[in-house]
Length: 385
Image (cartoon, rainbow, N blue to C red; front, side):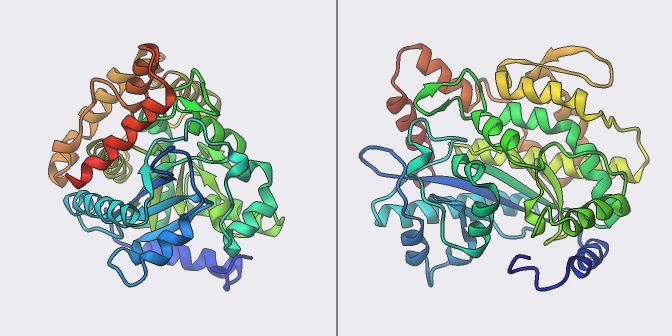
């Protein structure tokens, strides 16, 4: 059992259910993962512990976390009561992190993968949690040099949280297509728009879209089965792209690639938040929701990985094939009333080109991977004005 699991699995599940039943609706928190780079070569550097130590006693300290490898760092907004608050904190956290890193001579970037640094040169950070995952996963953990953006949304009610997760599965490909930022890895153009997703969700057990559970009891039976069969030792080993979080009364969306630009990170967080809010309203009103089987959802998932925002997605209710942009625009229209109510609507945009498309266009113009990645580094530094 993990360090956070001083309670038995049974006690933890009971506490998680109670947390959801007494939780608050539509709070949110955003987590962003950044690559730590040598400022001259822009290669990954194993310097997380230096940043962590330098943050001690600063306003940033409680909002920093390690994320598997020592060449990566995560910043968190903390729980926010509104999206405007979360958007402001995303900017503040980035600015604080960039200032701290700059003082140590560390550059930062936020794309789903690093274009060339070998995974063999990245060190797993020395914490009990990551030592356990290293022992369990071995090559799967070593290979996972990836960077994402996660959004936690408070959902009150245990059954309700699971039903919201069930429905949000359907929208994962749209969020992925919009967020794709990782066409390059291992010094090649992969031909994918999100190599990160292929590396992470295809390799990790219990990754990608989960099954439909229908309610808390079925979900709890499954998690209890995993503990009883010693398939997991802590609840975070459910690495799905959307999940009810057993440590917080939130639904966590984990599908998005990291974003070089703050405005696009905010827009993705806004759409994730609006989708969770709109879906919770639909659950409350017993609106018909599309809950496709995994075999159909998989078709859109692959399309989003391969072609991103440039491709097509299937309307799984009708079978119509349409552009990814049109599918995302339809989602924005669906969430619009709730988005306006929550003050999220101004953040909901579909860019002319997302991060993957911009990088691929530069590659096709003949730019080197280093030059393209340097442009992503510069885009991130814009947060400092």
